Length: 234
Image (cartoon, rainbow, N blue to C red; front, side, top):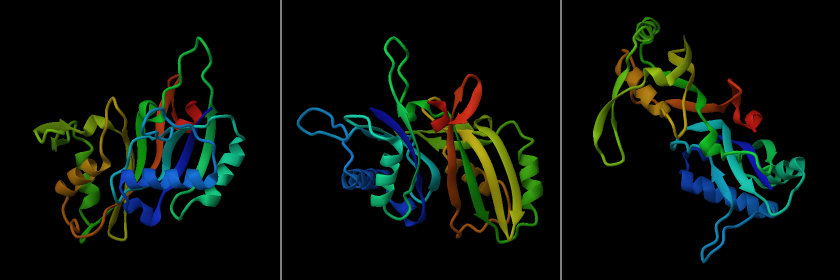
């Protein structure tokens, strides 16, 4: 039986790599004594996958993973067991069982399902008096062009503006705070750090030495033309 599970990545755990996060979750699953499925072959792997890995330093209270258990278990028991054996920063929030029905389309894994994600971003300014007006003018533009490197190291110009689906912002205590929803997934993807870099490069008074706080709030997909959190799509 397959399960979609929503969890957090907060506190110091946000500074671990995706590979180390996978290892940590694998250890939690083992300690929880879940009867998880393994792949066949000489080097068996847990039937575990995580949707859209985060960059190191980015926190989240809207992460998702798929696991496959050898036999069905009560959803509440699974969450309770995982949380009992978890560590600080990782809390398991929601769970949905996914049953593939014969002759019906197979429900894709979370990593293939996700289309958009929402973030809260906080950028520190030494002088924030102009940022409100500067960002207002930026949002009137149809193009926000950035230079992006592909996996081969080749540079290309990318207009990130169409990938920003929604953005709300305000200034408080020398911080620009943004709630934004952007493209996320295999079809179209905007790294929130690229958005941060564009804003930092096109506004004045930024404190370039300060840590930029990025938190992923939720991941979404469409169902019958409605945009819903992943756990409500399956």
